[in-house]
Image 1 (cartoon, one colour):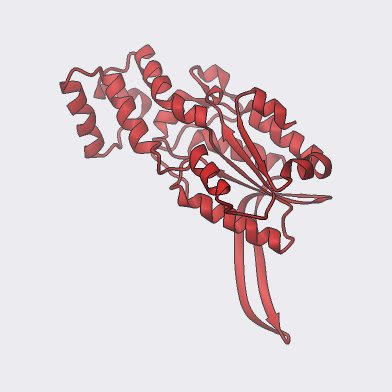
Image 2 (spheres, rainbow, N blue to C red):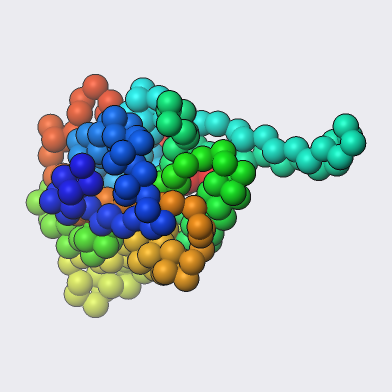
Length: 263
């Protein structure tokens, strides 16, 4: 089933026999997850209108997962000695699927600071050590999506004729910092077309190398962060990005919240 995502350009990696566990013990759950990921699309306008943060695009994916039984859950762990509670800790996971063969835990890291990967992986490690989860899953921006942001955003803005600050109001983009505006203005003064200047500044400030994306996740897993928990890592590909709003499911489309971010 994971081959379907690979064929669609998703980055897929598994660790500690997660592929075998998912295929044999969670085949129905995996099939549902694959179907939701394969159908997921992000329109360029909501990507820009949301300021790069979590808005319409990831909220649709979260709602689709929630509808499929992947719901937020707090795992409460207590240490009891001679009947007395000595310590207690709670681990919150955004998407948990309780199945007959065990429990799956999933986090979406769309655009956080990359240390959030350490938090997620270490959380999965502790929960697996307590036999609370069978597999930990992380969904983030894939390598091809990361590379596609600049050319796709530039091309879309040119196609829409967005060639001035005033035109950005058509997308509802009004809450940019002075530094971002100045960076665009300096490039325009040097002869760089407005669409290119805006896209370059937007991508650098919103989707930089220090944010959550595939290479940062892959580096941590290669170092053994999260071991020995079985892991499934998923990177959303460039193919998820679409230019036309008709390519996004109208039943789940929402207006982006300007410049919101993951928490």
